[in-house]
Length: 186
Ligand SMILES: Nc1nc2c(ncn2[C@@H]2O[C@H](COP(=O)(O)OP(=O)(O)OP(=O)(O)O)[C@@H](O)[C@H]2O)c(=O)[nH]1
Ligand SMILES: [Mg+2]
Image (tube, rainbow, N blue to C red; front, side, top):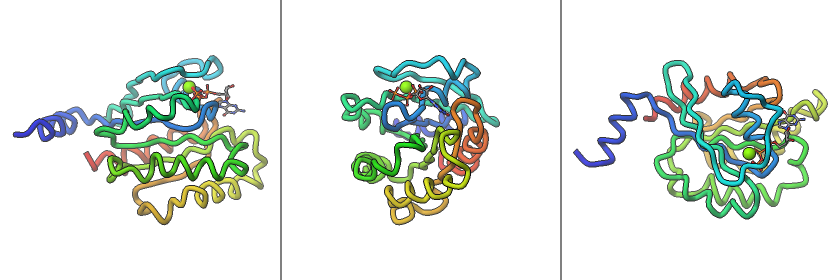
Protein backbone atom coordinates (compact mmCIF):
# COMPACT_ATOMS: atom_id res chain seq x y z
CA UNK A 1 0.00 0.00 0.00
CA UNK A 2 1.36 3.45 -0.93
CA UNK A 3 2.00 6.12 1.67
CA UNK A 4 -0.93 8.27 0.53
CA UNK A 5 -3.31 5.32 0.73
CA UNK A 6 -2.11 4.57 4.26
CA UNK A 7 -2.64 8.21 5.31
CA UNK A 8 -6.16 8.25 3.79
CA UNK A 9 -7.07 4.96 5.47
CA UNK A 10 -5.91 6.28 8.82
CA UNK A 11 -7.87 9.53 8.27
CA UNK A 12 -11.03 7.56 7.51
CA UNK A 13 -10.56 5.53 10.68
CA UNK A 14 -10.07 8.68 12.74
CA UNK A 15 -12.83 10.61 10.89
CA UNK A 16 -10.32 13.42 10.63
CA UNK A 17 -11.15 16.49 8.50
CA UNK A 18 -8.40 18.98 7.73
CA UNK A 19 -9.72 22.54 7.58
CA UNK A 20 -7.85 25.72 6.63
CA UNK A 21 -9.25 29.03 7.91
CA UNK A 22 -8.26 31.78 5.49
CA UNK A 23 -9.16 35.39 4.84
CA UNK A 24 -7.79 38.89 5.01
CA UNK A 25 -6.41 40.20 8.29
CA UNK A 26 -9.05 41.31 10.76
CA UNK A 27 -11.83 39.30 9.06
CA UNK A 28 -12.44 37.55 12.39
CA UNK A 29 -10.90 34.08 11.90
CA UNK A 30 -9.38 33.82 15.38
CA UNK A 31 -12.56 35.20 16.97
CA UNK A 32 -14.56 32.47 15.21
CA UNK A 33 -12.23 29.65 16.22
CA UNK A 34 -12.09 30.93 19.81
CA UNK A 35 -15.88 30.87 19.91
CA UNK A 36 -16.04 27.31 18.55
CA UNK A 37 -13.36 26.12 20.99
CA UNK A 38 -15.12 27.67 24.00
CA UNK A 39 -12.38 30.29 24.48
CA UNK A 40 -13.09 34.00 24.99
CA UNK A 41 -13.99 35.37 21.50
CA UNK A 42 -13.40 38.94 22.65
CA UNK A 43 -9.72 38.30 23.45
CA UNK A 44 -7.84 38.24 20.15
CA UNK A 45 -4.73 39.74 18.64
CA UNK A 46 -3.45 39.51 15.04
CA UNK A 47 -2.20 36.00 14.21
CA UNK A 48 1.45 36.27 13.23
CA UNK A 49 1.88 32.70 11.94
CA UNK A 50 -0.70 30.00 12.46
CA UNK A 51 -2.35 28.00 15.23
CA UNK A 52 -3.95 24.58 15.08
CA UNK A 53 -7.11 23.62 16.97
CA UNK A 54 -8.87 20.27 17.11
CA UNK A 55 -12.64 20.55 17.29
CA UNK A 56 -14.68 17.37 17.85
CA UNK A 57 -17.89 17.68 15.80
CA UNK A 58 -20.56 14.98 15.41
CA UNK A 59 -18.14 12.06 15.45
CA UNK A 60 -15.54 13.84 13.33
CA UNK A 61 -12.35 15.49 14.42
CA UNK A 62 -11.91 18.84 12.68
CA UNK A 63 -8.27 19.90 12.58
CA UNK A 64 -8.61 23.63 12.00
CA UNK A 65 -5.57 25.66 10.95
CA UNK A 66 -6.02 29.36 11.67
CA UNK A 67 -3.61 31.27 9.42
CA UNK A 68 -2.68 34.95 9.76
CA UNK A 69 -4.16 37.07 6.96
CA UNK A 70 -1.79 40.05 6.90
CA UNK A 71 -0.45 40.76 3.41
CA UNK A 72 3.10 39.74 4.36
CA UNK A 73 1.80 36.28 5.37
CA UNK A 74 -0.44 35.59 2.34
CA UNK A 75 2.37 34.26 0.16
CA UNK A 76 2.74 31.37 2.65
CA UNK A 77 -0.90 30.22 2.33
CA UNK A 78 0.07 27.77 -0.40
CA UNK A 79 2.28 25.90 2.10
CA UNK A 80 -0.86 24.70 3.88
CA UNK A 81 -2.82 23.39 0.85
CA UNK A 82 -1.45 19.87 1.00
CA UNK A 83 -3.99 17.10 1.81
CA UNK A 84 -6.65 19.64 2.65
CA UNK A 85 -10.36 18.75 2.88
CA UNK A 86 -12.00 22.12 3.45
CA UNK A 87 -11.13 25.80 2.98
CA UNK A 88 -13.15 28.12 5.22
CA UNK A 89 -12.85 31.62 3.87
CA UNK A 90 -13.80 34.36 6.33
CA UNK A 91 -14.91 37.69 4.89
CA UNK A 92 -15.59 40.89 6.84
CA UNK A 93 -19.17 41.85 5.94
CA UNK A 94 -18.43 45.57 5.99
CA UNK A 95 -15.33 45.56 3.81
CA UNK A 96 -16.59 43.48 0.90
CA UNK A 97 -18.04 45.91 -1.61
CA UNK A 98 -14.91 48.03 -2.00
CA UNK A 99 -12.57 45.03 -2.12
CA UNK A 100 -13.80 43.28 -5.24
CA UNK A 101 -10.41 43.44 -6.93
CA UNK A 102 -8.60 42.00 -3.97
CA UNK A 103 -11.10 39.16 -3.68
CA UNK A 104 -10.53 38.36 -7.32
CA UNK A 105 -6.84 38.04 -6.57
CA UNK A 106 -7.54 35.77 -3.62
CA UNK A 107 -9.80 33.68 -5.81
CA UNK A 108 -6.82 33.09 -8.09
CA UNK A 109 -4.59 32.25 -5.11
CA UNK A 110 -7.01 29.84 -3.47
CA UNK A 111 -10.07 28.61 -5.37
CA UNK A 112 -8.30 28.07 -8.65
CA UNK A 113 -5.23 26.28 -7.29
CA UNK A 114 -4.74 22.81 -8.74
CA UNK A 115 -3.87 21.39 -5.34
CA UNK A 116 -7.33 22.32 -4.13
CA UNK A 117 -9.26 20.29 -6.72
CA UNK A 118 -11.90 18.35 -4.78
CA UNK A 119 -11.65 20.60 -1.73
CA UNK A 120 -14.86 21.97 -0.18
CA UNK A 121 -15.24 25.74 0.25
CA UNK A 122 -17.16 27.47 2.99
CA UNK A 123 -17.45 31.26 2.83
CA UNK A 124 -18.34 32.82 6.17
CA UNK A 125 -19.56 36.41 5.95
CA UNK A 126 -18.63 37.58 9.45
CA UNK A 127 -19.57 40.64 11.55
CA UNK A 128 -23.15 40.69 10.34
CA UNK A 129 -23.98 42.69 13.46
CA UNK A 130 -22.52 45.64 11.51
CA UNK A 131 -24.88 45.18 8.53
CA UNK A 132 -28.58 45.99 8.66
CA UNK A 133 -30.84 42.98 8.15
CA UNK A 134 -32.12 44.42 4.86
CA UNK A 135 -28.61 44.53 3.36
CA UNK A 136 -27.41 41.05 4.34
CA UNK A 137 -28.62 39.25 1.20
CA UNK A 138 -27.05 41.94 -1.00
CA UNK A 139 -23.67 41.54 0.74
CA UNK A 140 -23.74 37.76 0.29
CA UNK A 141 -24.58 38.00 -3.40
CA UNK A 142 -21.83 40.61 -3.97
CA UNK A 143 -19.29 38.19 -2.51
CA UNK A 144 -20.63 35.29 -4.57
CA UNK A 145 -20.29 37.45 -7.66
CA UNK A 146 -16.78 38.69 -6.82
CA UNK A 147 -15.52 35.15 -6.23
CA UNK A 148 -17.40 33.69 -9.22
CA UNK A 149 -18.28 30.78 -6.96
CA UNK A 150 -21.12 29.49 -9.10
CA UNK A 151 -18.90 29.33 -12.18
CA UNK A 152 -16.01 27.53 -10.53
CA UNK A 153 -17.63 25.12 -8.12
CA UNK A 154 -20.56 22.73 -8.07
CA UNK A 155 -23.31 23.59 -5.59
CA UNK A 156 -22.37 20.62 -3.39
CA UNK A 157 -18.82 21.85 -2.99
CA UNK A 158 -19.46 25.27 -1.48
CA UNK A 159 -21.73 27.16 0.83
CA UNK A 160 -21.89 30.80 1.82
CA UNK A 161 -23.21 31.74 5.24
CA UNK A 162 -23.65 34.83 7.39
CA UNK A 163 -22.12 34.48 10.86
CA UNK A 164 -21.28 36.42 13.99
CA UNK A 165 -17.90 35.61 15.50
CA UNK A 166 -18.75 37.36 18.75
CA UNK A 167 -21.84 35.31 19.58
CA UNK A 168 -21.25 32.21 17.45
CA UNK A 169 -24.48 32.74 15.48
CA UNK A 170 -24.42 30.67 12.28
CA UNK A 171 -21.27 28.70 13.21
CA UNK A 172 -22.89 25.37 14.24
CA UNK A 173 -24.78 25.26 10.92
CA UNK A 174 -21.53 25.81 9.01
CA UNK A 175 -19.75 23.02 10.94
CA UNK A 176 -22.71 20.68 10.28
CA UNK A 177 -22.48 21.46 6.55
CA UNK A 178 -18.76 20.58 6.61
CA UNK A 179 -19.18 17.15 8.17
CA UNK A 180 -22.28 16.34 6.10
CA UNK A 181 -20.86 17.45 2.74
CA UNK A 182 -17.10 17.11 3.06
CA UNK A 183 -16.78 14.23 5.52
CA UNK A 184 -17.72 11.69 2.84
CA UNK A 185 -14.90 12.92 0.58
CA UNK A 186 -12.31 11.41 2.93
N1 LIG B 1 -18.43 43.69 15.17
C1 LIG B 1 -17.79 42.51 15.12
N2 LIG B 1 -16.44 42.48 15.23
C2 LIG B 1 -15.83 41.27 15.17
C3 LIG B 1 -16.56 40.07 14.98
N3 LIG B 1 -15.67 39.03 14.92
C4 LIG B 1 -14.45 39.59 15.08
N4 LIG B 1 -14.53 40.93 15.26
C5 LIG B 1 -13.41 41.88 15.51
O1 LIG B 1 -12.55 41.94 14.37
C6 LIG B 1 -11.20 42.18 14.78
C7 LIG B 1 -10.27 41.16 14.15
O2 LIG B 1 -10.56 39.87 14.67
P1 LIG B 1 -9.54 38.63 14.55
O3 LIG B 1 -10.31 37.42 15.00
O4 LIG B 1 -8.26 38.90 15.24
O5 LIG B 1 -9.28 38.59 12.97
P2 LIG B 1 -8.33 37.59 12.15
O6 LIG B 1 -9.05 37.28 10.89
O7 LIG B 1 -7.94 36.44 13.01
O8 LIG B 1 -7.06 38.52 11.83
P3 LIG B 1 -5.54 38.05 11.47
O9 LIG B 1 -5.11 37.09 12.55
O10 LIG B 1 -4.71 39.30 11.46
O11 LIG B 1 -5.57 37.41 10.12
C8 LIG B 1 -11.19 42.13 16.31
O12 LIG B 1 -11.22 43.46 16.79
C9 LIG B 1 -12.49 41.40 16.64
O13 LIG B 1 -13.00 41.73 17.91
C10 LIG B 1 -17.99 40.14 14.87
O14 LIG B 1 -18.72 39.14 14.70
N5 LIG B 1 -18.54 41.39 14.94
MG1 LIG C 1 -6.12 35.72 13.63
